[in-house]
Image (cartoon, rainbow over all chains, first blue to last red; front, side, top):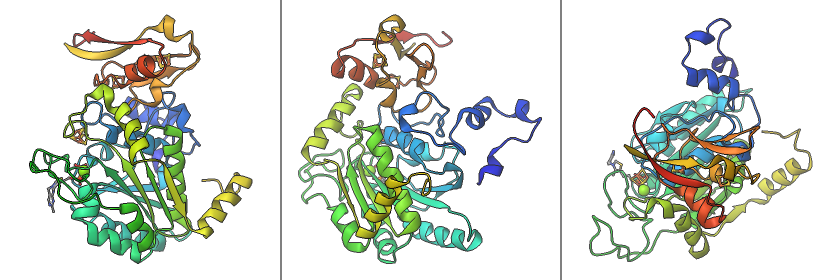
Length: 288
Length: 74
Ligand SMILES: Cc1ncc(C[n+]2csc(CCOP(=O)(O)OP(=O)(O)O)c2C)c(N)n1
Ligand code: SF4
Ligand code: SF4
Ligand code: SF4
Ligand SMILES: [Mg+2]
């Protein structure tokens, strides 16, 4: 969009919906918001139909609060639960056909750098485990092999949540799901190692137990993609419906999985590491 | 009737805390009052998951939020 598209022309405030006016007056556009300020500014995401207690919805909430430059960001999603919230945010959203997100994002990012050579436009894909590692596997891998400069975030609920509980490559071995009654026969795919092998320059894995850390990871993934190459975040975002987790225990489950197999993990190339070290030394100059 | 979270304002005000606000899955729902230093719920947006109760009661042992039944329009 760019900031000039976000601002309301003088005199038109009273005709705009209140939520939009709030966004411009008390929101994130053109401002450096810290995720700890959640609850004290107007968030970019609006009401959406994701289930009560859904931690994928929680991750998406923190993701938007962490965007380094929301007015210059484009989010790409696809079929699956995440798009139910992604499509309700004040950040341009493109719906890629199921499995195609990383191909669409590749073209989009290249087109943006031709159309706006002097501006930084961030492209972020957020899609499910099915969308990225099963049906979109080829597109995901090839965008990484080609070193496309955008961020891919897998919101991994270890199931096809949106279509009622089929197993995915990311479901853990042995797990029984509504449409995998015999229990999954194969191991969970190691997406993080695949990303490193395929050429991502920044790779992280997390369970959403710490908003500050989620925000830092999202910012780093976006900045590294802006300057160096493909980046990947593997986030555990439970499906309380398909895994029958009582909603009040969703955070407890995220904390348990963090201890078990989703401990925070971050890897980056030496070049990216130097960039962040430099940025931390003089934050104003390299500021997002 | 629907189920929503409700903050006990005088109890919450004793702590300079906003932990529950940082864990609600819903945007613009569990808010924090800048000057009163208390959390408050936008009832029409709350989906009743009780994650905030887990944070306040189970993790922090502060017991300042409870789930209540509310009638539409209240
Ligand atoms: C080309 C195509 N194939 C299949 C579907 C049906 N479909 C919609 S969502 C979905 C699975 C979603 O699983 P995942 O990507 O893990 O997202 P989740 O809903 O679990 O977040 C499928 C198979 C589709 N929309 N398009
Ligand atoms: S089906 Fe599962 S992943 Fe989808 S919105 Fe509901 S709880 Fe979240
Ligand atoms: S966690 Fe409890 S004490 Fe802390 S802000 Fe929320 S309601 Fe108040
Ligand atoms: S019950 Fe759930 S949706 Fe409602 S305020 Fe608490 S955490 Fe947020
Ligand atoms: Mg899934």
